[in-house]
Image (cartoon, rainbow, N blue to C red; front, side, top):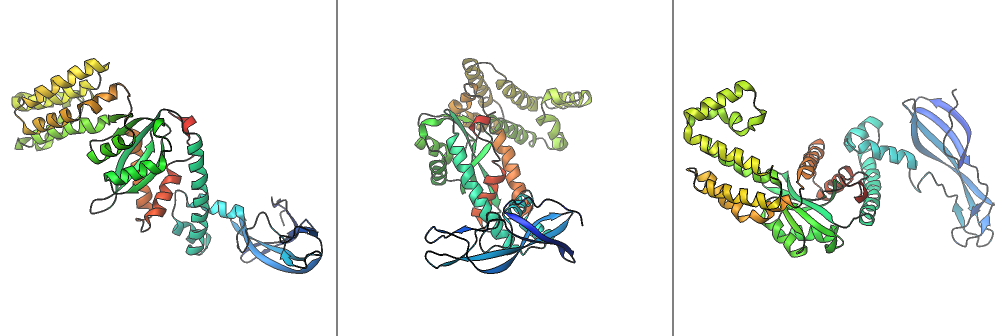
Length: 396
């Protein structure tokens, strides 16, 4: 039989054999003396011996089982009987520590049910192993994030739908490190305050918070971080304008199939598409007003400097209010209301792009498991899979 090092220094191999269900390796602990857990005296008096069957990492895709001869000692000092301690095998467990870690890693990016089926481990057992390790790793990662939190933190706050019927979770993210800091039920002001209070240790560290135009989030941030700069994500602002253009397009029934040409940036259109767009705007001159308002607003975000951006935004708002389209008038009123946090982008050019990408990953975690009944476990999964080893020192 091929000889392979066991990799567990505390054991010596007595015998190994290949059976129908896998490799059987008989081992015993190399130490012949143990310290009594009751009084602390060392003893070598063996009371009796028992054998534990423990599963270990596979070899050549064959299951490996360790038959561990565990000695029970009687203390010379207090006469108590106790079992020898094992570093690589937890008490009352049928799996080695390294095999449990291996199972945990397999469950990341997969489902517990799939790993359970593949390795022929009871689902409830694997579930207990995974969440036991996950809880420990989450605490370690949380501590590491708190220790490495830099001055001038930039936070992102956004929501994600977890169930049909407008059931949301609020997601908090460190925009510099690209790591999820926590999640909380629904997207109301109180929930956002709880989430921010639990995961941000110092109010003074927060320099900037990136949000969309959801008022409860703004109320929560202003309540907790009055000195922080609030930046409205530019993609949500541009979306308001493109939606206004789409509403204007719907007023012209023959343009049902022209949505792509109108909404896409003019610099991204092919030559034939530009010719088609020119024909549409020439045929519908009123619609050309809406189209050029959209393109003018896109130029606004290419502006250099806060003062010039402020002038351009105010000019655009006045033009939109004078347009013949109600959708643009409504968009102008919205942008006028949020003018200051929109312009803050030119002082702190951060966006919610990272948290939007992370939200997509969170949705994949949910879909992979066909949903979660236990939201605490869902949040734990998200924290572990969307945080990684990122810390404040790895800021982008």
